Length: 252
Image 1: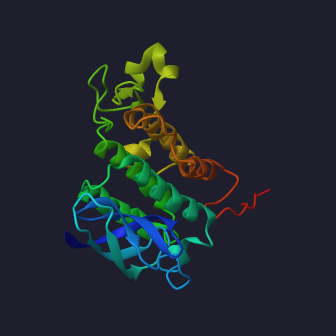
Image 2: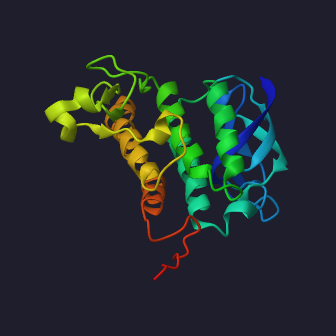
């Protein structure tokens, strides 16, 4: 068995004295693991960094074997994020959530393209937190738990949508929520296509986090959500800090 593909490196772990096992999210073959001979060497360390774009060739005697990768670096993303704590946390959260949620060897071309977009924004654009939030929406959709934000579940209205039902994932308007508003999840305008107002990214992550925790996670067994996402949410929820982690100066 043999194939060639392009992908994003999600994780690396040592294997024996000098090899490494890598997990790569590829275009056509989905999340796929394999052994890199010499992958634990100093020479390969700069190449095998999470988030790196790789050309990979996979070989195995049988399709269900772990197999062996040969890799060619296409683009490193480490330089863009290493000096930016929030961007680095974003990269780690994306890598961890893909490794957590995606079944092995199942192709998700649309999610792959959106993953590429977010990763390329990290460290280069102030809009990456919004792109990340919408990426979590896409991940929920691919896992079968997409949110229906087109109209109010109670009234059918398409205006003044303010909440999301934690049970069904459907939008709810202010009028439709009524006395149940405090039991619903926030629906910030940025989840409906607008640019985020202050605090809206954090609100959106509360909502997507609920469905990751209470819908996606139970479908995968007992493993907890990755701590990498928790760390990112904490960083993006701090109004006293900018995205690079430096304290903003306050005007008198």
